[in-house]
Image (tube, rainbow, N blue to C red; front, side, top):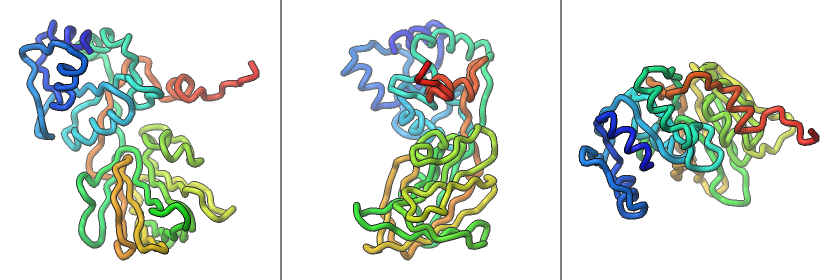
Length: 274
């Protein structure tokens, strides 16, 4: 982090720092901040580039803060796997130079929008990875009726259902057997969580599909999670999930590709016998 600040100060960058992160750097890490650094406490800001320092959770929070501003996000991995935040700290100097040289490309990632037929979701109704409907109790399953563009598909008896973007296909959806989707493929995933049927399999839809969910449960309530931010919902509320009217922009280095990330992060095709 100190190296990044020095690189930006050398280039006389106009630096905006999230308030919580700012105080963490000063109080916990004892890092001296450049005099020109300004603290931001809300989502009212503008920038040429946003740098997320952390893991994929930090990247998702950065995407939420950016919203529909169209600011490209660079993810520096300070966590473990780092699928979204895929730049290692050792490459920070090279990445900053490539940004200033305009030698990076921008990928546009689909975002999901959640709405209710009664009321509205609490807080931010958008998700870069997935919208998940999940049972609230540990024991009984929930029933999830699914309609696609107004046409009945099926009713899942399961622990939950995940609607994911291509970005989210390597997250929660992957862990419950969903397919991996290439970013930019204009698809959505419909992945049940522990379905009580051998005939139920994950389904891929085009991203212009409008998905309506009607949920019933024994205790009449269930959970709705958007990129991990969860809230309770009553079964008399019908959910609609569709593609949001904006995309999240992700800055990618030259030579960086989705398939290379699959090989290096998820050990795609690795034979443990070799």
